[in-house]
Length: 425
Ligand code: DCT
Ligand code: MG
Image (cartoon, rainbow, N blue to C red):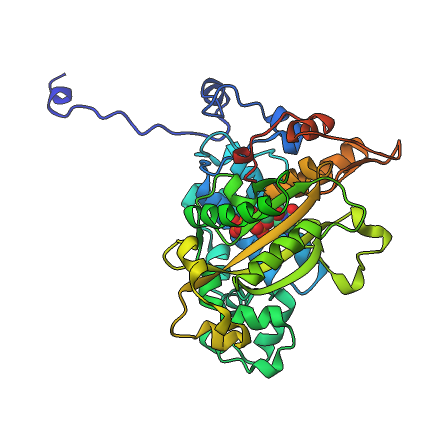
C-alpha cells in the first residue's frame, strides 16, 4: 500500500525466549563445532591452556577472588575457596573459544554450579561483577597484597604486619629491622623495588647462560634447562628457575649446585642465598628440619634460593672484572642503597636433580602451579600413583616408574603429551 511505501516497515527486534526450543536447536551452543563438553570434563590434565587464551576477563575475575581468599585467609575454608577459584579460572583458560553466552558456561567441571559460575556469568552478561570490584578495592586486601610482595612474606606475616598498623609500601620500607629475625625477609624489604621489577626474558636468558656456563666448567656432562614461566612462553616473570641434571651421587646431592654457588660467591655476585629442599618451590623445607644425611633425601630436590647481582648494562664479562669485594661487609640496606652499585638484585633458584629424576623435575618446575596440582590429583585419583618433582610412584605395585624424557612422564600418566606452552592453567 501507499502508506507502507512512505513508512518502510522495520522488522521487529528478534525476541529470544529462553524456552524457544525450535530456535536453540538451530543455533549451536558453542562457536566451534568440534567442542565436546563431555570430553572436556573427562580428564582435567588433558585440557590445554595457552597463555593467549580467549577468556581473559573471566579468568582475571576468578584469579582475583582466588588471590583474595589466599591472601586474606582466616580458616581452612578460605584456603579451599582460594583453590576452588584457582581451578575455576584454569577451566576458563582451557576453553578453546571465547564465551559470548552464559549458557556456554553450564556444566563445566571445575567451574561448577556455585559461586565461581555466578561470577563468570555476571562477567559474560554485563562485563562487571560487583563482588570482584569490591574485593579488588578492599583496603585490607590491598595492604596484604603489598606485604606479600616482600620476598619471604606470606599471608600469616602479612596479617601480623597489618595488625601492627602497617598499610603501605612506605610503611614496609620503614620497618625496624630489629623486629625481623628472618634474613630472607630483611633482604626482601631492602630489595623490595628490585625484586618486584619484572624479570624480562632476555635478562633471564643472559643470567641463565652465565650461570650454566659456570656449571659446565665444573661438570661438563651437566644438562640444564630454564624452567618456570619462561619455559611456558612467558616474556617476563618474577624469577629465574634453573634446573640441573647430573649422575647420581653417593655423598648427598648438593654437590653441583653448592659448587656453582661457591663460584658465584667467589665473584661476589651473590647478595643472599639459602639451601633448602623443595617439591614445588612453595613447599620449602628448612634444612635444619631435614638433615642431608637423613633417609628422606630422595623425595625432595636440593634447591639453592639466591638473590643475585645482575649487571645494569647486561654485560657479565665486564661486570666480572669489577672488584665487588668491598660490598662483602655491607648489610642488606647499605648494599641496597649503595650509590655506586652497578647491578640490580634478581631472584634465581638453582634446582638439582639426578638424571633419573630429571624428567619429573622438568614437569614439576615447568608448572604452572595449577597444572601441577591437576596432574598430581589425577595421578592419585585415577591411577593410584603419587607424582612429585622427583618421580612417579605406583602405590599398588610399590615401585618407582622410570622415565627418560618428559614424553615418557606423560606416557606413564596415560596422558597426551602437552608442550610447556600448553601448560598455562
Ligand atoms: N610450582 C609448584 N608448586 C608451587 C609453586 C610453583 O609446583 N607451589 C612450580 C610451577 C612453576 C615452577 O614451580 C616455578 O615456580 P615459580 O617461579 O614460582 O612460578 P613461575 O610459573 O615460574 O612464575 P614466575 O614467572 O612469576 O616466576
Ligand atoms: Mg619462575
